[in-house]
Image (cartoon, rainbow, N blue to C red; front, side, top):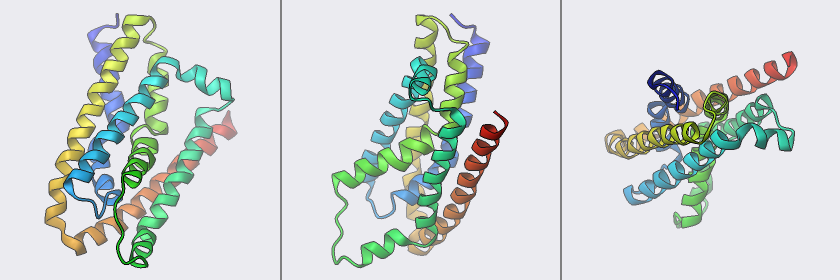
Length: 209
């Protein structure tokens, strides 16, 4: 069984790489137009999917990537491109333009499930950084008891992430329509920069590796 210091370091590492406070405004942006109940469904589903993905990589991450011949840098580049596409739509309000072309756009269960899976669960919660950290930590958490402890740490981090998502709903009431529009575009630019950084780090690792 790992020491308390090892468990604490693993907890801090995973929590920092997930960065729940940083995800809160992004959660508001991608769930724009949803009511509290719909956002609650998205937050629960995204947290569950994120936990499942990270727990899977904690137990068998290295084996999964090696089976498909995928390296972590390649995963980072792919995630960066996907994030950039989302950022592009946020900045130029492409999603809102599509909604305005339809007289009555209902937020369906499929939309809720899709947003929860992408981009929230993957690659924002269980992104390249979090998965990389999980795979690296799994190397020092050998044995059944140690792996259970690592999965427990991931669960604790995802519970915190869920709570942050729930609290972020209250922020939406203070922003209003103008504030949401400004925030969406601003976060789109930030997300685009994050996506470029993912790609740059991945390409650098691929070249040097």
